Length: 102
Image 1 (cartoon, helix red, strand yellow):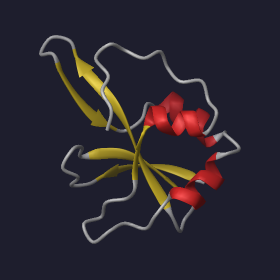
Image 2 (image 1 turned 90 degrees about the horizontal axis):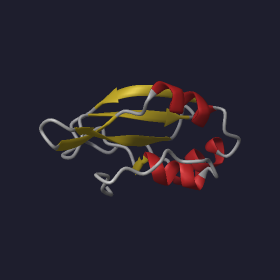
Image 3 (image 1 turned 90 degrees about the vertical axis):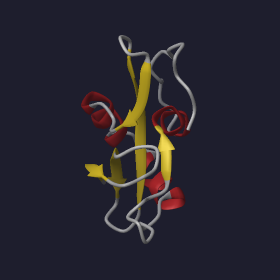
């Protein structure tokens, strides 16, 4: 299992973290916020969280069950970070008031 910073042309994000077993993969996105401009966006996952996710024993099964090959546009099945961490029985970061759902 490995994690790759993946650039794509998704209509909501242009970068994600791809967790792959070599055959299937899931795109994981994390929400970001700029307090000065009051804007948010989706992008790849923080490196320290990637390490914790890769060490999780449930990740391989999750990717095998829910992962996919890319579609014709190079887009993989996408999940937001909080949903992935919940599925892997991991403690999630404290939720911020500005967070939305994908």
